[in-house]
Length: 110
Length: 114
Image (cartoon, rainbow over all chains, first blue to last red; front, side):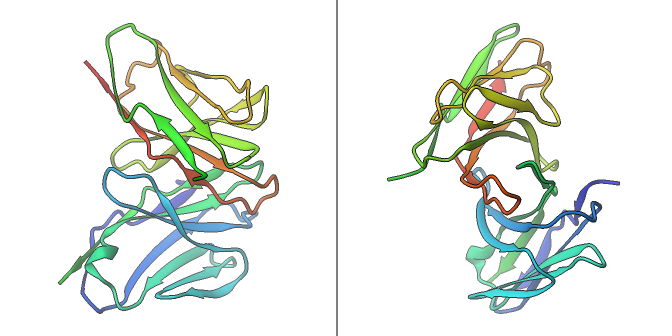
């Protein structure tokens, strides 16, 4: 079992729709969780971090964390073609080490 | 502007050659990291350093070496022992030493084998 699992996609949504990206993790002691967006050939950029159970909203983005079920998700409302990218879920293992999932590719069609 | 600078952007390695990737940051961050990214495999940790003159192996350290002589610099050497070095290499840094760190990435170096 991988430490952090994501569906590789691609996830295709029409412009204006809600995109839902999911991630599961195996280590129950993980305390902090991150979503990075990566455009092709570019470096990842942090878009959301979440540390407590529940929802955290930032603009069109909402991160959801459920530690009991060991999953974290990212919702993107009013999806735009510029949101088309690979979204990486990352989980902190402690000792300053992040473990990344393989990423979900999102395609938003006009 | 504060940030992380990686160079070169593209690098080619010949058989049996060692090559060094540069990473410099002016964010005054204590921790620095090297990740490797292959298509479909996400990011994998090669080495990381929490303080100057100290570094730890990550999950795929074999065939790589690092040094941390200055807080600002964390160069990665890809040695001839690394038989499959073609990948996108990312350097990152973070400012906190607790668990809630956030990584800031450089722009990456694409390494290819001639």
